[in-house]
Length: 315
Image (cartoon, rainbow, N blue to C red; front, side):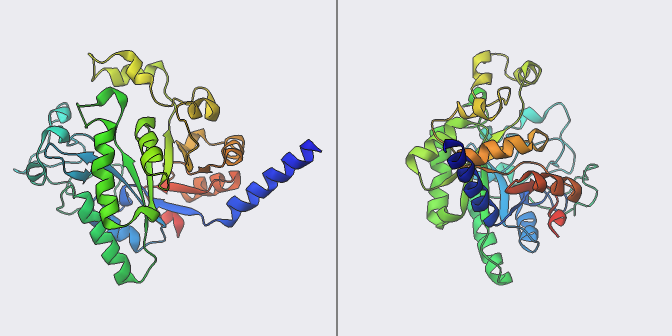
């Protein structure tokens, strides 16, 4: 009887998840087509068949919340005000947390050609304020007469880079949530992070906000690569976030609650992982899926959405 009840529960959960819309997320606004984490990228994604705009946040020296995947001005993406490039070995000298926003605005984020994204439209553009992005996207969605978008927002914090690349988690969350509440988008926001600390704060102080635990596989080799830039930080701080070495169950030990979404690197996804997450009540939305073929493979495993650089895979 117990086995029958358990089987019935699993079937009910499967039906529940299959009845919900598939979440099509444009990674950094769809970086295959437009400069990542910019207003033009987000607006272009709104014209395509996406549900959610995925983006990353960083904090400037003067406590402005801006869109940026990197905690520094990346040599791969950024052009200096004088038109020259940042040397490849000096990106860490341009830490966003040590620069006022007015200075960051003078650096271009959209002109440099990227070999990995040959279709990306080139344009002069700068890293925008988070508040300006929300305003622009809400206005543009209404102009297009399409549903208002969801926002999947990553807090770019890690335990080993507090007060180096970003403020401590509480301050980061407070600065971010002030804007989210002011803009009235709480019901359409997902807060995602590799850092369980920011998710714990969201869960405690904003329990109705959806959360997503980002997961990648982190072994000793990966930790040593990270430590190369933080030589004075104790190694223990590099082990304070999920590493997937012990699967979903091991990752869940880093949180005191079950998040809305489990968001693994796409190569970690198996049918068994999807079933395990669904049994726990979590959706599975992997990153970063960039071909229609891989999208279909993952859909057959039962995922609930994907994060993609290329929104064309949803067409």
